[in-house]
Length: 232
Image (cartoon, rainbow, N blue to C red; front, side, top):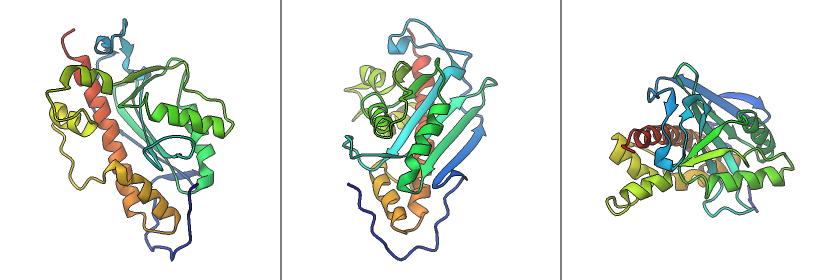
């Protein structure tokens, strides 16, 4: 059970984006990122057929804890996809109240098509089961089952386990993409950032989590393209 006790409100409560429902904020940015080919070679994941780049939806959640289970909720869902013209679209749904979760789940479901292929880093074990649970608890249709899912953690482990210190996303992005984060708020601090905000605290760390989530999505897309370019 989450406890959100009162505190004196901070003067900095600014959450980026547009409030599209009470307590639910949407941010969207379109940029050049990755320059994907029209068809992504998925043999690295032991799939038989390539996938059109605009079918891919990279996703990552920020949650109230790392253990999972029915007591853990997602308070942010970040997604990124390549549009038909190859530009990269990054969207985040961020809740600022407990009651906004249902609207967040409804909006995320609208971003999924029957032919969507999910892309994640450890999402099969964590993000996807967590979201499925949240849909069930909210008594909403669960939209993830039946979709293709490329979880990049597994092919990364097959290629580099034993060569790297570990196969966390931070390691993969450094080794494969040359990404070194500065002033990054670790994902482990995301639960405290959100709960502090709910209690009236500053939005500074909430915004830092949003930046962290954005970089996660860009790195997942970059790792995907690196894996797709490996010799078969």
